[in-house]
Length: 53
Image 1 (cartoon, rainbow, N blue to C red):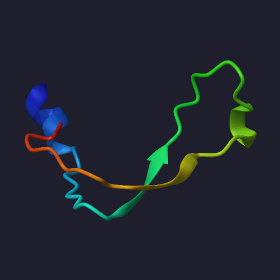
Image 2 (cartoon, one colour):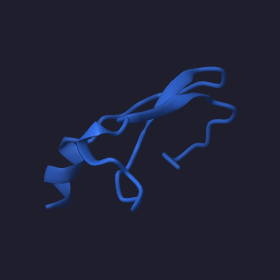
Image 3 (tube, rainbow, N blue to C red):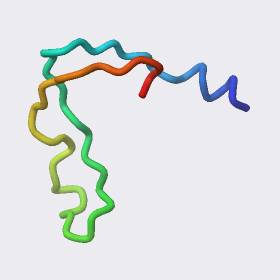
Image 4 (cartoon, helix red, strand yellow):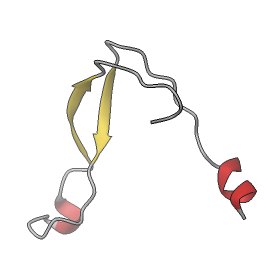
């Protein structure tokens, strides 16, 4: 089962200074449902950790 899950994982390599969009999880009680934003603002990567953390 783990092999099937790991086959679909997308590996992403970020480096410091990259701009990324963070996906919004709509679990907050004040979200607007399907009319809310899908992503937060742009974020700048400051530090990259090894081991997929």
